[in-house]
Image (cartoon, rainbow, N blue to C red; front, side, top):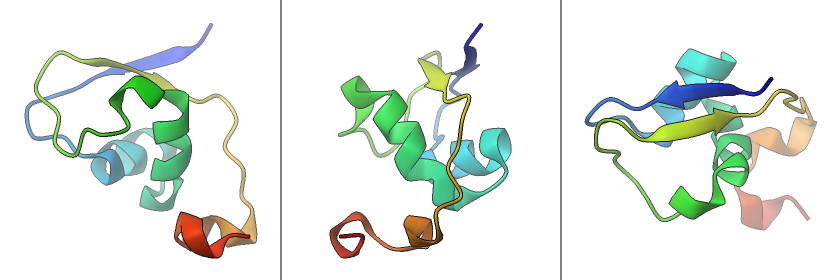
Length: 69
């Protein structure tokens, strides 16, 4: 069963990633799991997000997406 997270007002991707996945650098994978909210910067309360079950620890994860190629 997939995990979910219910947002609080003011949550941002990096804060959610840190609290739910243990590292803010996994925010990109969190966004990929919730593409319908990819344009959201600051969340309002009550949005249910999917938490990916598998998080890659690729060494390129620390790079911005445009430098990962």
